[in-house]
Length: 233
Length: 352
Image 1 (cartoon, rainbow over the protein chains, first blue to last red):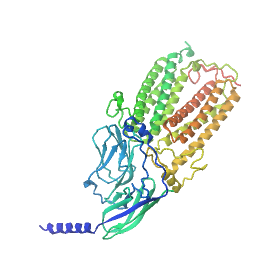
Image 2: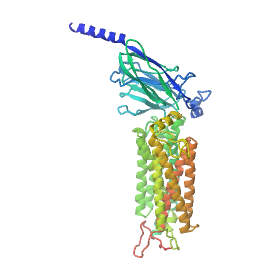
Image 3: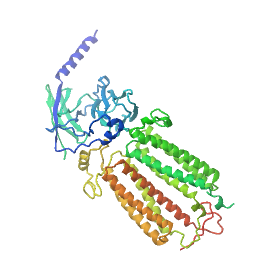
Image 4: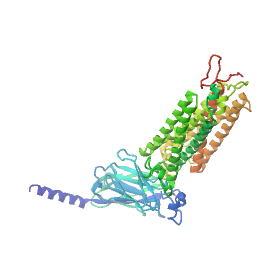
């Protein structure tokens, strides 16, 4: 029974660290006028895919509201590795719906299961195109109503591309992190990185088109705030 | 029976060779459409198609990019079969030993092309796509050469005419221009397989300048402002420089082709077949330049980009065939040499 006090002590310490953990919150904004999105004409012209739409959908590289709040920015703690809880995390889901990937920007941990679904009534192929060694490229069939496909990536990678070659306008970018400390800004530009242990960190905000920005932040016993302002020239 | 009477004397063999070359050209077009539509990986398996035997894949599933990739594979199978038949036919019916081996070479090349195309898919190797596209052009030239070598013109060519010989400087110029065209095709294939869309969105300027800024900040701005419909990769400074090199080489090719056409007319006379062919070649290069511009102006519309590929293939073929015909006409003949380099009684080489 000598081990019992050690276990209790470890549990108490972890509870304490969680209690001391805080969130990093902030807002991402965009200054300047982004280029106009394009209508995905080939989608509307496709016999199977076009039938699912009344109007032609557009690309959405820049999801920004009237106040300039920028969505789809991947915010993470830079340089934090070896902390992945992906193996035990709930699976993330990437769906093919209306011949588009939903969501287009996704973030997962290394070792975390990524489920790719086909909610469409047509064939897709799911082609993962990693650029980092250790994340293998794959290209799999997914028939209409076919079984979900599972993926997991062992190496961190920003904006790992998924595409469908049958419908070339379909693509998504999945960022893979070696820790749970990341999030994606919502439609109001807000982001929350939860349960960050106390300490000094470099927070990185990455947008698919606008590149990355970094800021230093110190997390103590309450939420830390850091905002990012991108600019399109 | 004389070599002249037996060598390639079957008109049906020649017609079949022409048909094979024509089908190869169509196959090139389909292959071009595959890349232009970014459909090269739309069928993840090979040699099956979505688990089906390739020849039994349901027509209802020939959708999107699958349509281009699958029809390309089907026609490739057809061209492979035709090439096999041609190789066997040449071996059995053509009396020229070198033609036997050329037929074998064509067979081996088409098999290699099939394997390269399949491996590109199964190994996910874009670089193989570049080889596959380049070798396709060479194979097309080979099939056209086989059609030429089985033609009546080749076998019965008479050189007993003053000025039939093609001057060496003209032959060298056309050969050099043809090699430059081949280099340009390799460059074009490399650019197409970057999957980055148009590296430069305007023409004749490049990002509004005669020479674009390729510094990191400038390239970041280009990417930030670019809305790529198919989620193409970000462009890089190297890709911009490749595109500029492609444009400069196009200009060089146009100039060299124009000089070739002018020299051919001057040295051979306007009614000479090779002079006319050189003129046609120049017109083709001009068309190719227009198609290149149109590819940029149309934001790389698939049909325009594919037409650009096809006219490029024709340009390479015309230059190659011109060279072969010119060297054939210029073969020296001696009394003690019963057969010329191509195994046929060579024509009298009348000097101008």
